[in-house]
Length: 259
Image (tube, rainbow, N blue to C red; front, side, top):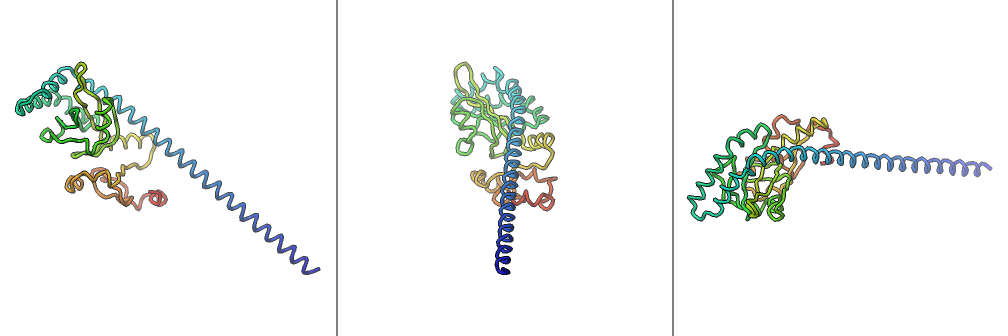
């Protein structure tokens, strides 16, 4: 009789422990599912916020494009330069375009627009307004954005590392009549977009770049523009963006573990 009671007690305790373990496991799965859903929803909201911010800046940059590179006199000069075989004459037309665009370009920094590049249909840079002496190089080997923009002869946008600066770039096709002249590319500083995100979604934002995106840069160019991230191995950050940021110790450890 006593043995039967012990067996029953053991069975009851075992069933209780099994039920308890099953309940804990079910609660864990439910918690993990909720966290994953919340994380996914947060990423979706952030992605939507980024797209909305780019849309806002995109409309502004398009208006800038209409008032600068898209102006008829600029396109006529650009057309003449492209059909000029003499290097000296081509340099003359380049100077004319630069002088025409310079007053407007000087005002663009107020809107955090740092770049205005004219790119020929074959991907060769004709003019960099922020660095006029640097031209003649082809960006297609490293600029997927320009490759898409020139192939499709359509607007394109996205973050693109460059030889002089990385930026969120907006590219617009240039035509004179039916003749395709190439593209006009404008660059928005990453800090402007991050500040806009912070104003909408309070928090800490920084841009991380995978090391392979910087492979085309010479070591001197890379070290001038970028530095190894303090937050994630194998990633880089813009040098100027690290100023005033929190140190890794001040960030949530769970955030660091997820990077």
